[in-house]
Structure formats: C-alpha cells, structure tokens
Length: 475
Image 1 (cartoon, rainbow, N blue to C red):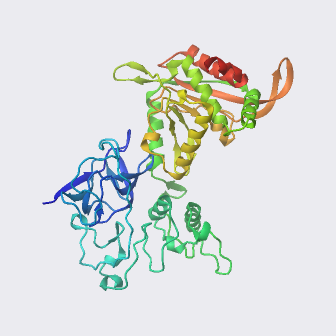
Image 2 (cartoon, helix red, strand yellow):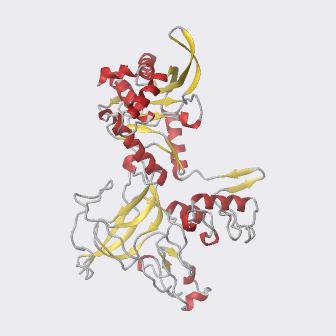
C-alpha cells in the first residue's frame, strides 16, 4: 500500500515567513523523484526552486500560481511506498539531499525535469484542490474549465506551455518568471504584447511600457508603424497600485520593498547609530589598480580593493565586526568577516554576502562580487547568499553622489559608505593639485564602541585609500 505524505513549505531562510508561488513544475499524477524541484517560489529575498524530499506520485497541489503561502503550509501530497513503473526513482526511499532550512540530508541525485506534452483541457465537471488539478493548465485555473466557455464542451486541445501561459497560436515568447508575475499582477495579457527582445522575446521593459501606456490612456500604435514595446491592444489599468483619491496613489509595501522597509525601520528603531566621515585622496589607489590590471590576469575591481581594505581595518578594530544580543545584553564579536555589499536590482535593494571575505585576495573578491551581482540581477540569489553578513560595504558612488548617512543593515553593527571618486582641488605635498577625491562615511552602532574606535577605523581606511602600501603590513 502506498502511503500519502504531505510536503509543507519549508523555512527558506532567516526571517522569511512566507513565499509566493511563481510556477508549478509538476502536476497531479506526475511521478517525482527525491529532491526533484516541484515548485518555484519567490520570497522577499530571492527566487527559489523547492525540491520535494519524497519520491512517488503527486496526488494534490495546494495553491494557485500567484498565491502567497506561509511557512508550514501544505504544498503537495505524494503517494510513496511503491516503485513507479516509469523508473523515475525509488518512491519508497527516504532522505533528501537538497538541504533547505529545516529538512534534507546528504547527497542529492541528479535534478530531473519533466517534459510537458499536449493534453486536452478538461470539462466543467473536473474538480480541483485535494482531489486533483483537473481544470488547470500548469497550476492555474483555466478559463476552459468554466461552463460558460465553449472550449469546456470539448473543443481543440490547448498546449500547456512551460512558461505557464496557454495559447492556441503557439507559445508566448516570454521566459522570465518575473515578467510573467508582473503581467499577472496587473491583469495584462502577454499575448497582446510585441516583444523587443531577440526573436520577439517579451522583456520586463515591454511589460512596464505597456502598463505605463495603459495608465496614461494610451492605445495601440497603427499596424504600419508599430512600436516594439507597445501592446497590440490597449492593456487594462494596472492593479498593483490603487488610487485612493485625487492626486493620491497607494502602492502596497510587499515583496522585496516590504522586506526592506521592515528591516530599515527595525534598524532605526533598535540601533542608536552615529555617522562620521572623511575625504580621502584616492589617486594612488586608482593608480595601483591600473598597475594590477596592466600586469595581466583577471581584472581587479575597485570594489574588491575597498573590500580588502575593509577586512584589514576590521582586523585592527574588531569591535565593528559584531552584533548586539539585546536580550542577553551582550556584544557578540565575530572571528570571521562575512561581507555584505549593497546592490540595486530590478527587484529592489538586495545585500548579497561574500563569505569569509577576510580570507580572500583581491582576485577572489572580484570574482565573487561579479557572481553575486549577476545572480542578483537575474533573481537567482539564494536565501543563504543574502543572510549572515557581519559588516556591509555600500558603494553609493555608483549613483553619482558624494556622501550619505546609510542605515545599518540590522543586526550588524556598522556600514562603510563610499561616494563617487571625482577630480577635485587638493593640497598634495604642499602644493595645490587636482587629485581623485572620495568621501568615506562610517555609520556605527554606538552600543558596540565609542567615537574613538569608529574614528580610528575610518582613518585607517582613508590611509589605505591614500597609500595602498599600508596594506602590505597585513599581508
């Protein structure tokens, strides 16, 4: 006898209590292997494919695409205990290799993907929920399942596309789950858009253009002069923000924006922060970087050099590489530096973390910054890559500004801010000269140290920026 096991939404990382279903990867009746991804969800931190720790036959799915589920809510049920005839895996074996917080064991088998095939759209008598997923295409309640739809009476089959959109004319040219989600949130039919990407691929910019056009009462362009980002038919009014009155628009604080708001508010509420700053002559640092890159090998980024300076400074002033345990009334100091860096992405502000930054050289730091930045842009950062930082480096100079008083990334104790590097008049060796000048700022938790420690840290960072040879003492 097969045993039906319920798989619940696991804890996906520090501080995450809910996730939104972006795309179902399996349907009721599918055979799944242990650790096979069954659903793609989006949290306030990242997009995550959730693997199921059981192997067997999917008997039920819970939640439509776009539904927000709390941690611990049922995701799917799987009938296990018998080896499926398809040979997809041992349905009765236990133990999962894909480790998310809260479940998983040792070694994960190779990931499997099922191939979607054409299947007829079920009629109006089909049931949903725990009994099955009939009447759905790729996890969505399909219009064909409605009694008022002519297709429900047994019309031609509809293709279940891998991107979750069914059409009779062929697949919708969109591959990004973020683009699909944005269109779904605003009731925008992607089949009405002309993509501006390669081979007509629909990009996020196309959807945003269509929503702006709809909000301004714009109509489709004439067929003779189509704009690559104008919908072929006018799109509905966006629903992500609701107008509450004349001149007032309300936007829900949810997703990444909501998580950022909560964390910043908590930081300001709990941390008595203070900020100090200093201008530094970065001319020699820029020359040193140029010399490094001219010597051959992988290019070294400026951010990596600043990170290397940070880790050296934290070894001299470890009070700033800490956190405060308010309940125990203790300062917890770390013997490692997990360096976070602020990155602006299409999903909002994220802070990826470079693990053990203190043990990396400039080349390794450059590679890791590049990898995490690209993952942030594509929404592929994992919860583990967004949590656990002990100190944050914030290069707000990329926005063309000189200074800032950043809010500490709770529960850390400090953040170093770096402004833009620009030519300015500077007294160098007793004479006025044009030098590359940068403003450095340090925001710190006044509970972990006083101004002397903070000032000493910032002065050491400035000295390394002005004379990179100072770093040789720590190598």
